[in-house]
Amino acid sequence: MSRKLRAASAQPVVIDACCLIDLLVTGQAEGILRATGHAWHLPVAVQAEAKYVRQHDPDNPGSYKNLPADLTPLIESGLLAVCQPDGAHEQARYVHYATVFRSDGEAKCLALGECRGWVLATDDRKAINIAKEAGITVLSCPELIKAWAATARASRSRIAQVLADIQTLAQFQPNHAMPEYAWWIEQISRGMQ
Image (tube, rainbow, N blue to C red; front, top):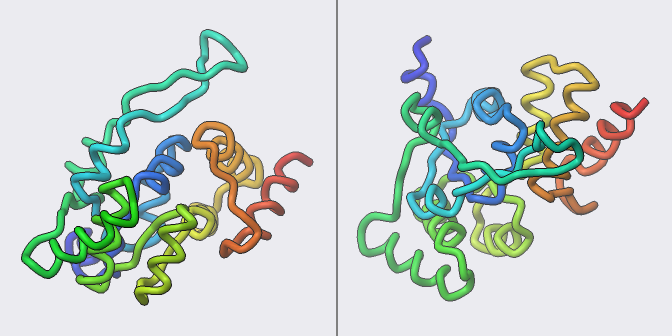
C-alpha cells in the first residue's frame, strides 16, 4: 500500500507545539510520527511556535544549546500536513479557544479537533482538560513514544535515552494522571539498570 493511500485512510491528528517539541528533541520525530500510523496535521500557528529545540552541546558536555527547529523535511515528505481553521464555524471556534489560551497554536488545534473530528496530540494539562470537555480525543507524548518503541523494537537503552532527552531537553515529564505514566517511569528505571 502506498504512503499516500495509507495516509488517506489513517486517523487524522492535529499536533500542538509542546508535543511536537517533545518529539523533535529526541532526533526520532519522523520515526515516532510514522510509527503511529496517523495522518498528522500541523497548524500554521504551531509551525510558528516551534521555532527552537534544545539540544546537548557536544562542545561543552553537560550544557545545552538552542537550535532552529527544522520542520521542512517532515512537511515536504507529507508526514506533517500544514493546515489552519477554514470557514466561519472553524474561525468562530478558534476565536472561542483563543479567549482561553494565550497560544494561537493550542486554540487552533482545539478548533480543528472539535470541528473536523480530529484527535489532538498535546501534553498541555489545560488543553487536555478542555479537549475532553469538548469531546475531543487526546493523545499524549507517552502514548506516542510507547507506540514508537513497540513498532521500532527499540532497545531498552534507546527508549530510556529518548525519554531522558524529552525530560531534559524539552523539560517534559508526564504527571501520574497521564496515560502511560507507569510505562514511562518503568522504562526510565529499566534503562538505568
